[in-house]
Structures are given as structure tokens and as C-alpha cells.
Image: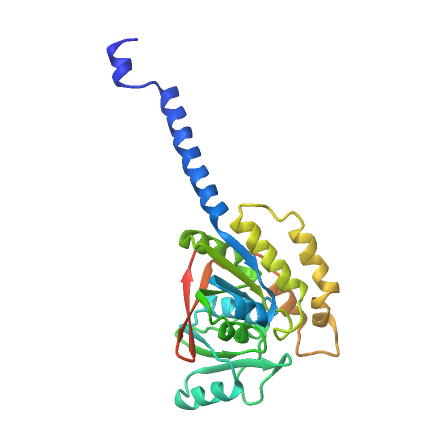
Length: 265
């Protein structure tokens, strides 16, 4: 071996070194994932038990809608537990937009229901939205033992998983809220399974198959002409996977819940 070749390693040596470094980082990342405790705790009872970084999931429709509203330029979305609190906040801030439902139906006197399709083409730039729902916001209020809370939906699941992995918490609690926080539903269970797979660096092989089956399960109401409060377009908007690059981070100040949207590629 010449002196020059000793000082300047061969290209093959450089490639091998880079591969070794990459594998070490990869193994370190996998070890961190292995040490992360990930638990799925359904419904409002699960939200009450949740610890660590907690994901409150509401695919149909609350947190899909919040992702869409932020993607449409909303400055802030304020989740509110009760209709009365929402109306009181609106009275103090007349420029705020009232959005919400009970039993899936738009609350009387509100500007919009809990329907993503109502916001197609709506420019929310600079607007503050007050949002109250039967399940999702209830989950946020109930997660009293969580160290941090983010919302969960299919539309931004991958971005949410990336955020969680960067935070590298010891415990992740995933809470699929279901119908009004009382009855488990497949769309929220699916989102929980998908998010867990992403965190564990796995592929959920039946993801698209389960999305398609939602039409015959909880999603059937969106195709029922007797339930106009559930428009068909909402089904398609809520079941799009990983189309929005952002994370909805929740904070609490006393009884008031605040959300902050962080763009996350």
C-alpha cells in the first residue's frame, strides 16, 4: 500500500464506512422505538387512563375537519367541550367562527356543522374557529394525565407519527374515541392501528382494504339519504390517507383547550 492510498482511503472504503454509520444510526433508532411503550386505550375511559404523549383520534369527523381547517389557512382552532362554552366565547369574540355538532347535526346558531365538505373552497386565512363535538373534544378534555396531547386522523397520520418519533417519549397512548366516546368504531380503530404501525416502523398491509370496508361499517351513514347531516363527500375527505402535512398540538390553560398547528413534512 502506498503512502497516498493510506492517507486517502479508497472509494470502496468510504462507501463501507458510510454504510456502517448508517446501520448504526438505524439500529439506534430501532432500539429507541423498541423502548417506546405504545398502548391503545379506546373511548373516553381510555382517554382518562392515558399517560405520556397521548393521541386523541376522531376520524369521523372532528380531527379530520380540524386538519382541513388549518390547511385552509385557519389561524387558530379552539376546541370547546360544551355548546354553552362555545356560545359564550363567541359572544366575547364576535369575529370567531362557530363550528360544531351534536348527534352529528349542526348546532342551532352555529356557522358550520362538523362537516369537512362544508369547508371545500372556504378561505379561513387569519380566522379563529371555535369547535365543539360529541367525541373528539371530549377526549381532549378527558386526557387529564397526559404529558402532551396531539389529535389523530388518517389525513395526517404520517406527519403525526414523525412528530411523535422526534419527541421520542417513553410512553405513547393512542385513544380511538369512537362514537361519542362510548362505542368503539372501526375508522378510529384503524387509525390507531395505522399510527402504531408507523411508530413501530411497520407496514399495515391491510390498510387500504380496511379503508374500503368502512363504507359498509361506520361509514355507511354517509351513503344513507335519510341522514343528510352526514354527506357522502365527508366520507371521502375523512378517509384520505396522509394528504395533509401537519400536526395539531393541544395545550390546556385551566379549563380552556388550545390547539397549535405545526406544518410537518
